[in-house]
Structure formats: structure tokens, C-alpha cells
Image (cartoon, rainbow, N blue to C red):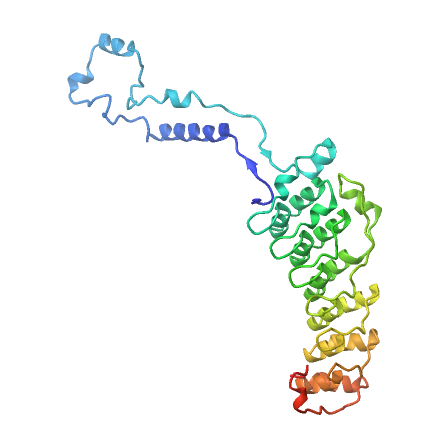
Length: 348
């Protein structure tokens, strides 16, 4: 797993140097250097201290010389192997700048081998928010299809970039050729997620046309692939909801405006109960979204669900404030007619 996006190879010479420096500090502080008497023998009498010079010379001429305050433990074999490395620490993933300048790329396979959760190193770098690592990994793949690898939740790197609200990474993936129409386990394309979260930056990153400068900044190993944008504006997830429905459910007025400007069909209905964007915004109490849908997007006030309910009728059962706003905007105040056949209707 990436740790801040990179694996760092620590040099053994640096670790050994740290050991030697620690030993020297201990000697200077007196922790090492005072005789314990365990090997060199105890000093018991004054006569022992007054030993002759000949005795001292004979001691010093022995096969192993000891510091006069040393405990007698010979550490020479351990410290003789220490060396100081002057090389810079190496990283497993070089920076994108170095790759661009050297035109040398590491093998891509180790970084895109899924782990036990199906995540590649690109998935992990994005989840950790490491933009530089994500950009580097994007630049080393030999083909854009590798960017579409899915984890066990059927999420691609693009899904995760949108889910974590990283618009720069989202845009880089789109420029590198990552597909914007891949679906996760719930049938959501990245645009569905951006609309639900109200992330206008990611909506634009997924939908705006690419420039030549953006393609050049990717430093790709393959010819740039400029896919046609926008895509999937009206596609439904497995709940039958298009991005405009999800934005309306969340009350995200700016995303509603952006989708309408991009060409999304604001009149389309979701597939389960036939509710329009106005129905969904009204039943959840999003006054501003209702105003934008009706006043700016031109949504119909009298559109009906499969059960025949208008937005006003839905709001009158769930949110009187929205019902009042709809009436002010021109909705006909129809009452809700309930019978036994309506037990499975979309009105709570």
C-alpha cells in the first residue's frame, strides 16, 4: 500500500550511522565508559591503583587493547562494518517531472495489480488524496483502458476521484482517456456521484471539452485520446435516476443549472414512479431548487407521476411550505384523491 503515495527505500548505511552516533553520545554522557568490573576486574585496593609502569605497558601490549575506562566489551567487529552513504534516498515511484525529462518509465504492472479489495495503487493514491502520486501513476500506463480497472465495488479511479471531490485528479483522468460511462455497483457513472454530492467542480471536470494544453500536461505514453464530452447526461442508474434527478433530490441548484446548460433533459422522469425533477425537489423540501427548475429551466408544474400526482399534490402531503411556493409559481391546487389502489403510490 502507498504511504503518502510512495515507497521509500531506506539505506542500511543511514541506519548504521545512526547507531554509531547514538553510541558516541552515550560514551560522552558517561553511560558507556565507566567500568562495570564485569570483564576487566574490580579495583579493590590502593596498591592496585599504584601499579608500576611496567605492568601498564605489559597490559597495553596484549593482543587486544582496551580503553582504560572501558568495560572490556570489544565492539570493533560491529562498528567496522559501518559506512556513510552519500546517495539520495530512492523512491519506487519517480516524480512526473523526472519521467518527462528522462523518458524512462518504470514497469506499470506492479502498481496496477489489485490487492485483496480489488484496489490498485492508483485507487489507493486517490483515496489518500495524494495528487502527485496519482498524476505519476496516470502518466506511466501504456493504454487508457488500464485507468478503468474496477475494484470489488465496481469503482474505477474516476469514481473515487469524484467521490473524494478531487476535481484536479478527475480532470487529469478524463484527459488521459478514462471512461466517463463506467458504472459502479449501484449503476452510477461518475457524473451521477458528482450530481448527488452537489460538486459543481467535478461536474465541469467530467463534462467540459478538453483543450490541447490539458492533453499535453498529461505526459502520456500513448497518443492523447480526446473523448467526446459531455456524455451520460441523461443515463439512469439502477434506481432509474438520471443526474438531474440526483441533483434535485439534493437541492443543488448550481448543479441543476450546469446540467441544463450542458444539455440535460430537465423534463425526464425517473423510472420507478415516474417522478420529475420538480417532484423530487418538492417532496424533499428544496425551495430554491424548485424555483430554479420552474423559473429558469422551464419544468412543467402539472407533470404527473405514474399514479397521476402533480408536484403540488406530492408537496401538499409532505411539505406545506413547498406547496405554497408551487401555488405562488402558478400550480393548480388540486387535492389528493386516495383509494385502496394507491397504497403503493409515490405519495407518503
